[in-house]
Length: 174
Image (cartoon, rainbow, N blue to C red; front, side):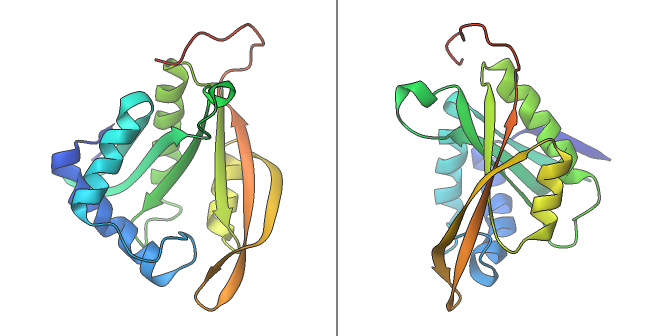
């Protein structure tokens, strides 16, 4: 049975670091070059949860994926927008876990007053591009040759999704 829940930094950081590590070491999906330690991952979880969210997907008592929202930019006018990311264990693509994590994350972010989600995807990455399109993200641009990793330049495609559609003055995010 699968459940999606708030991450607990002290209990989930090691699993999240283990899921993320191969993306850092073996791919250009992440532009980090050294995987974060469990302690560093715990800090990231706590930081995200202060005003946004960090959720984990658990199957049979084991964390197999996670998704989070963080500030998009530090300037005050951007405070209703957030950047989102999702990571699943290898072999878990197209199992519904990514969609379920994002649906729960968007619900949480919307309830906290956020209006827009932004996602960046290192190219090529058909799986991520497909998931984001299926989740209602629309392309907004591509940074060309922006990151150097694994002996080559990589593009990053950016997409955005509305979390709340009204044009009323926003309340402060909670």
